[in-house]
Image (cartoon, rainbow, N blue to C red; front, side, top):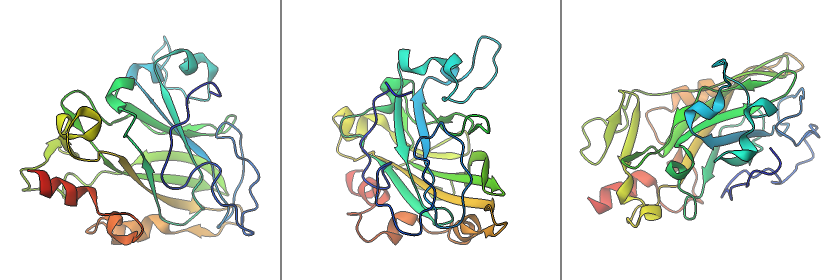
Length: 238
C-alpha cells in the first residue's frame, strides 16, 4: 500500500499531533496493535471500485492484503489517526480529488494478523455524491474487531428537495453541483468516527453511544473551526 497516493486531509492526519497520553507507537494501518483510551489509532480508507476489494474467489479482503494488489489498480488511500474513544470529524478535501474517478467506493481498514475492514460504502458516481458518513470502530480488549458504517435512513435530508435519498440509507447531492465537477458546492467528505467495545484494560469505549444521542444534530456544527456546514452550502445554491 505504500505506493498509493495519500490524500490531503484537513483534520486528523496520520502525522497529527502526538500527545503525552498517546502510548500507541504503531503508525501503519497494516500493523497490529492493542490500544487504550486516549491512544492514537491509525486506520486507512481505500477508494476503488467495489469489485477491487475482493479476490477471484469473491472473498472480501483487507486493503492490507497484497492479493488485492491495490497499488497497481486505480485506487487512492487516506490515512487517519483519531484518539481512541473521542468523537472525531475527519475530512477529505476533494478540491483535487474526485471519488468517482477512483471507482466511487471506499473501505475502512486496519490490522494484518488481526485484520478488520468495513464493507464497501458508496461515495460517488457521475450522478450522485454522498458527503457525510458515520464510521464505528469496534474493539475487544484493545484490538480492533470490526469497522462498520452506520446509516440513519436519510433522516437528515428527509423532505429536502436539494437531496436525493439513495437506497433509503444515504443522503446524496448531484455530482455536477460539486466544485470538483465545475459546480459551486464543496463536496469534501466528512466522516464522523466513534468507538465501541473495550480497550486493553477492559475499560468501556462509549463514544458511539454519545454519537447515538447526538444523531439529531450534525457534528459539523460542533466543530467551530470549520467554516460553515455542507448542508448550509446546499441550501444556498438551489
